Image (cartoon, rainbow, N blue to C red):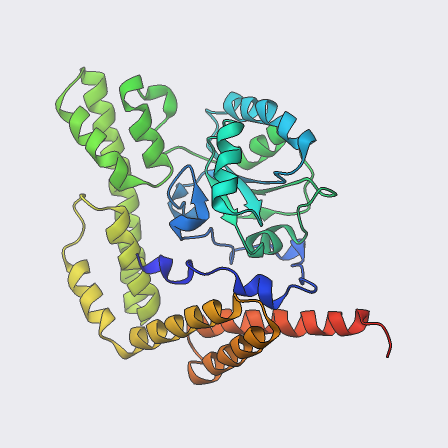
Length: 348
C-alpha cells in the first residue's frame, strides 16, 4: 500500500532522457537496489522484496523478447532453473521497454512462470546492468548472493549463475521436508507472500497426517521469525526518529502479514505517524513527484520543460524528502542527457 506511491507512472524518466540515457556503472551495483514495489510492474507473482526473500540468492535474467534465437532458448533455460529447484535461489526475469499486455502474452507463449519485472522506462535495467538489452545485447545476468552483495560484470550461463547465487543461502523450511499438499504454501512463504500462504497453513494445521500438520506448523513458525525480525527493525527505526521509513515499514508489514498475530500497537503507531509533520511532508512531496511524472510522460519538449521545473521545486521546497532525492536523480539524468545531446549535435 505505502510502497505503491511511486509505482504508477513510470514514463517520465525515459521521456526526460530520451536522447542519451546515462548508464550506471556496473561496478556501483549495491545496497541501494530495490525491486519494483508496484503490482503493475510484476507478472506471474505479486511484488517481491529482497528483504523478505529470507537469506536466499537472487538471479536477475534480463531478456530481449524480439529475439527469435532467444525465444528458442527458453525451454533450456526453464529446464536449467528447474534442475536447481532445491537450491536456495530465486530466479527473476526482467524485460525492459515492453508494455505489460504484450509481455504477458510472450510469457504465456513460452510457458515462463518465473516472477517477471516489467521495466517500462528501463530505469531498473540501467541501474543494475549499466547497459541496454537489445538485439545487439540480447541478455544479461546479475546475481545477488545470500549475504546481500551483488556481483556485477558477469557473463555466466544460467546454471553457473544459480550455483554462484546459492552459496551461503538457506531456505526457511527445507523443501525436501515439505509434503506435496503444502508445496504451494511453502513456495509462497519462501518468496515472502505470507498472507497468501496463511489459508493453506491454517487448513493443514487441522487436517492431514502428522507430517502435514508438523510442516504447516513449521511454516507458521518460519513466518513468525520473519515477522519478529521486521517488528524489531521497525522498533529501531522509531527509536532513531526515522518516521517516514517507519511509516513505510509498518504499512508494508501490515499488508504482508495480514491475518497473523502482529503487534497490536503497530496500527496505532501507523495512525500517529500519518499525522506527523515529517510523514505529511513526505506524502505531499510524493504527490508532487507523481504530478511531475504525469506531466513529463507526454514527452513533448514543453511537457519535459514543465516537468523539469516541477522537479526543481520539489528539491527546493521539500529538500530532505525521499521524493526530493528521486527528483534530484531525474534532474541529473536530464542534465547529462542535454550535455550529451549538445556534444553530438552537428555544428551550426
